[in-house]
Structure formats: structure tokens, C-alpha cells
Image (cartoon, rainbow, N blue to C red):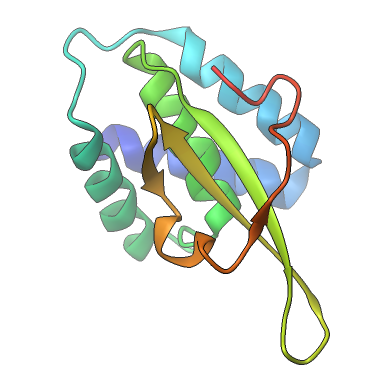
Length: 127
């Protein structure tokens, strides 16, 4: 959980003080920086991000969680794809949501994603 908290805190901070492109580059760098010796179960990554997110200011932000989730999964050698979806709410307002797909399994952001139309994956946002 400590690793998830650190990566999530960095992703949250990057989104607050820089652009999405910079946060995405940071997540890619974190994902490639060190391979975990033992690949944690995907469910364990999801749990750790959820637990860390509840304890960190801004940690429940779906984009920060998705960036962190992708980085953590890539560190263990898994292919993880960052997905972004859009929707128009009943009020007419535009909404967006981010999630991570790893081998067809949604790791973070899965509960809300059914309400959103997925955009094509971003160039460089996959593994």
C-alpha cells in the first residue's frame, strides 16, 4: 500500500501543478523506473489504490487513480491501458471519467465507467 500511496500522491500532485501531458509522462516514467520482483494480484493493486486514495487529499480523483494504477501495473510488467470516457449528464453538462484496463479487467474506475462512452486510447497511454 505504501508504494500505491506514493505513486498516487505523485500523480495527484502532477495533475494539480502541471499539465495532463506532464502527468502522463511522469506515470510512464514511474511505470518503467523499477520492476517489482513479484507481480501483485490485480485485485491487490486495486485495493491498495482505493485504500491510499481514501487517505490522501485528492486521492479519489479518477484520473490520478488511473495514472497511478497504470504505473503500478507496468512496474510489475503488465500491460495496462489508460482509458478516458465522456458523457453528457442529465443537466446537459459534459463529464469525463478515467479508468485502467489490464487484460480485459478493469482495475480502477470500473464502477462508474458504464455511464461513459470510451474514447480511443491515447497515443502513448497504453503499456
